[in-house]
Image (tube, rainbow, N blue to C red; front, side, top):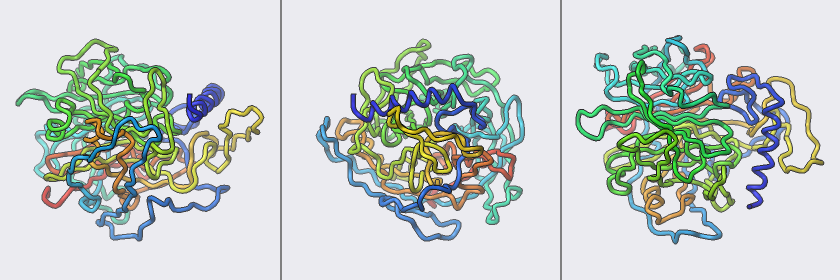
Length: 498
C-alpha cells in the first residue's frame, strides 16, 4: 500500500467520524467534505492568492470574446511505465476562441414533486424534443435533474438565449416544462449521501429507432463497487428503467458522475461500439490527481440488475486502478497540470466542428492556496497522528469541513481527442493527456464565486451539447436573483453552425 493510499484511509476514518457527529446546514445533509451546493467564501486567515504557474491570469476582454489561456502540455511520466509512449493520432483541435457566448435563459417554477433550486448537476440535450416549438434556431429539449435532495428529472424546452449585459435575471426568457419532474430510477437507487449523477441521450442505432436516456448515480463515499449505470425511456410518466450495472474493474470514484456521447466517427475509428463516455472527479485524490473519463459500450439488450459491463476503456485517469481497492493509486508524476484537491469538474461534452474536435470538462476551478479544513482558513489535520491538535469548529457559515481554496473560477478545460485515442488503444498511459487550453467563464455568469451565507460553493453544474447546431449549454448553479434556481448559458461552437 502506498503512502498516499494510507493517507487516504486516514482521512476516510476522520471523515466518517465527522459524518456521524455533525448535521450539515446545506441542501445535502452532513457532508464530511463540502457537498455540492454547500457554503464557501473568501479567506480571511489565509495568505494572498498566488497565480498558478500553468494557468496564468489574462487581461479582461469584451463580453462576447473568448477568455482563454494556454495550458502546459508537458506529459507526466510514470516512474514505472507500463506503456511505452507512442505518437497520438493527429486530430485538429477546437480552440476556446471558437466558442461564442449566445446568452442565457431561466428555468421554470415548481413542476411536479421537485423544483430547480440547487439543481442541474446532470443534463442532456434531446434533438427530437419539443417538436412543436418555434422556429427560433433552438429546437430540441433538455432533460435535467432538479433539486439535489430529490434527484428527479424533468424535460424543458429551450427558449432563444438572451445576453443581459447588466446581469438582470428578468432580462432572460423562461423555459417551459414539457414533462414534469419524475423519478426515472424505479427503485433501483436508494437514498444517497451527497449524490452524484449523470444523464445522456443516445439515439437509436437504426433509423427510426427510439433513443434512450442513459443515466448513472452514485454518492460521496462508496467503499464497495456499487452498480451505477442504466437507461430508461424518454416518457417520464413511464420510464421503464433498466440496470443498474457496474463498470468492470473500476471504482465508482472515477465512473458515476458526468455522462456524454462519443462521436460516431471517433468511435468507429478508434473504439467501435463505445458510444458513451462516463467519469467523475473525486475531491481529495480519491479518484486520482485529476478528472477521469472512461469509454464504455452500452449493451444492445439490457442485462440483469447488478450485471458487470466488461467493454470499458479508460481515456483519461490520473492514477492507477488496483484490484479490489476503492480508490486509485496516485503519484505526483501522474498529476493533471494545475490540479487542486478542491477542484470540482461536474460536466463534460465531446465537441466537434468539421474535422476538429475537443473533449471539454466544465467545472469550478480552485484558485490560490488549497487546504483541508474550514472555509475561513482554519486547517484540520489529516496526517492521522492522534497528537495533532484538533481545532474548534468555526461558527456558521464557516462550519463545513472539507477541501477549500482561496478562490474559485468557473472554467472549461480542453483535451485533445487524438491523445485520448492513443490511451484507448494502449499507446499512452491514461495520465499522459493534459489539458491544452482553458476557458474562463465567470464573466458570463450572474453570480460567480463563493457565497458563505447562501451555502454556495460551486459556480457551475452540468453541461450538454446540441451537436447538429454546435451549441453547448452550461448550467450556473444557485442564482439568488432567481430564488436559487439554476440558469442555463449557451455557447456556439464555430461560425459555420450559425
